[in-house]
Length: 56
Image 1 (cartoon, helix red, strand yellow):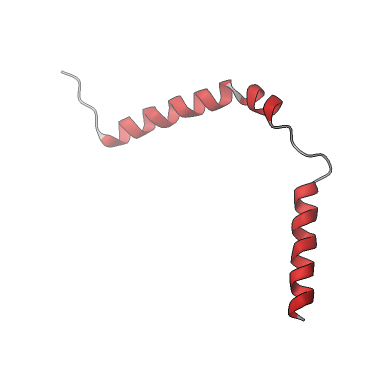
Image 2 (cartoon, rainbow, N blue to C red):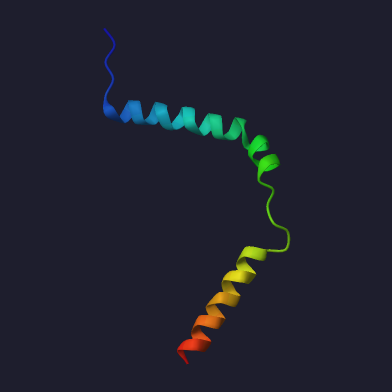
């Protein structure tokens, strides 16, 4: 008789999900290439400056 509890089920599920994510990391990178030059950080900083300028 095999007995499992919630912790073991969650642990096994997390291990399997992590394995699949790692196995398909190359596929995801090919479909969604990252933006060069930290574009997202710059636009976030620009928006923050605009909002604070309007508040001032």
